[in-house]
Length: 334
Image 1 (cartoon, rainbow, N blue to C red):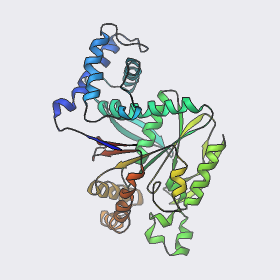
Image 2: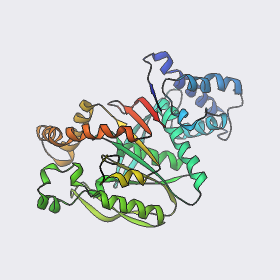
Image 3: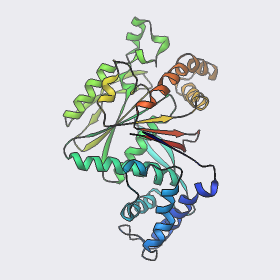
Image 4: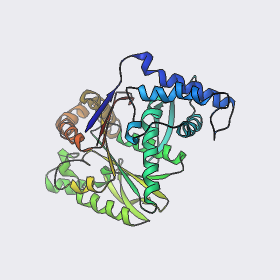
């Protein structure tokens, strides 16, 4: 069963949730009791402003929870939204998150937070409460420049605000070394599925599931090689977010990756957007011309993009985003 939801194109409808929530946030800031709803707003008004808007919205992940948002959910959301800097005048915030000793700025809209990322975090919280000792594994798959790393860091940040510690793993850490790629005659095709070591990734996922303290490799973008034991996962990190291109690839070598996670999410961006974003990033980080970056994308990443898009049907959730990484469509698969 697949249910697709997309933006209606009616700006008045699409902004209804943001308008309602910004009003509630402003009211809660005037009456800063984060643990409860603003006293001057009746429950009926909340239902009218937000909960009904959520039910009628053309874009919502609340359906994935198999229930409507409750007033308790709304109260928690208002507190988080205020902490993140949202207000009636600020419907998009820019958050600073950290990866590989560098900071990344992530834009987050109020609508996307309420309708997509907040309920996703609640789902993870719910799953953790049902398993007590074990970890929850979330896979973020998608093509080049789909925003996998950015979303993994955003979810890590949001989960921390909910009192949940998460670790982020990357498929890039399982690149074969450049020396090995040269020996195999694959150096010019670095980034294809056969230039990774999926067996090592599967083995590490199994170790993380059964061991509290684990050391894992990290891909060093200055060295252009993986560095062993550069990432430490500790016992407090009960959520593990793993992101990468080929996590859902229908290939026997990769099947163990999908089998090793609890929830798989696929990020979709159009090919033209992916080509531009990925090429600009490659030209900047590798100090090459844009022409060379476009050539690499057309030779390696474009074919990858088509193969990776075909794996979306193996995900429980598909989130489509635009050039600004705003959510444009959600597909819930069961």
